[in-house]
Image (cartoon, rainbow, N blue to C red):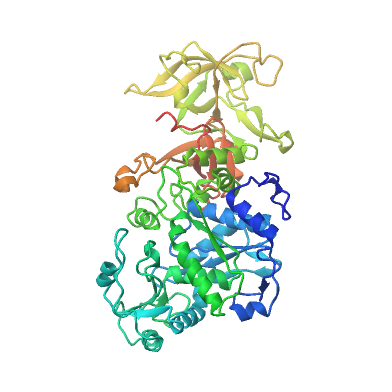
Length: 598
């Protein structure tokens, strides 16, 4: 296919991938041109009574509400909603809530918020496409009865151990269940007994009747319904039998008129059952043609994180992190609190590509996407994270008084002069970074040491004359003199040449702030690979909290405001703890990759 993307719907500027090529092929061939849409999910008759589908394609994002979404889900969100956007389609947000045991309203609310924050919406042409799989339980039961009536499903009363043993393995075919050859009438009666609560949990299941000798083990009569007495967050105690995911998911797609059902590669082996089930339900007249088709892509594997919901839940429950939104977690709420932007996650999703080939993406790719997004946008500020006092001993001689405040200025953003300037003052005592002074300099060190000159950024050149120490020999202050007539922006600024530049904050007007220096949560790229206990490779230095001094402009920072702290990196005002009178900033990432040499 040509690389020229001139398809309607705005896809002409997007990089090609195999999913886009499939969508464009289907649009060109009119694969779904005859579809009708009943305005809401429904069976074949419901959609047949509707109008021609106004959406050229339909995709879906179907999370199970049993945890918080993570960076991998972000890629799926961007992919599904992005394809629908670019090809004049609709993307549905569907809660795949067919499991009553682990799903909670808290997770439902968090998922809604995450999708909106990422910049996507499930409303298309005035219709809101927000759905719950549990609302389809009635149809799923009806479909199961239809399969039984067609001798395509049966109730199996073997124990779980017997079923497992009789299933066979890759080298041996399965063995038919002794219950496989019951009549449809007998199976229907037993299934209704299951529905009515006549049998205990785990005593029987409904299985599809396919082929116990199939080389694809997933086609060896998979279970499609189980007995489970559990209160469901949406349907309450209406049901004591629940559909299995592999049965429910294709039905959900078909009821919603999905065209392209996109999932990750671990579902590739399930595609034959997906096709088997929908083909039979369409033949039986329950579901509309043309039916959905499933396509798989390689999931996003990012180094230095874990994305297993079980492991994330363990990190939270055991107190290794402060909660689901801990900025060290790869959850969307954690990344948001860390300071990542929707645009940076979208950029990462696009750059990571869409393919069938798996692989690992280095965590630095996420940080690069953030820098690329924020560099042209983030306001600048001067901050001292490891404060050491600097005393300018000739201040009164230069300015006439030790109480004088010399006005200094810096751009809000060096690339956007229209955004104005930050105003602050140079005073007799300043805060500088502790690493900016050495009594005995190392080779190539150009900052402050006795006898050396350096520039105070946006201010004067100074010459270090020594330091003060306490009784234990610890350095408590650096001493220096101002070199007159060398202020930045004045005619004499270049009269004296120096190599070192020092960032600073006035000790008089600077503001105290709590700064949380977050780093990667794990010390190794693949913390749970090869059976590794991921808890043993937690980075003990993943969080360091410092009391910093910040320039006065940050007094008006609001929660979620993002900045580049000059020299240090990108930071965000914490969305929960930052408030007037208590400044709290989180480090999102450094200016450069600090892990490259590790």
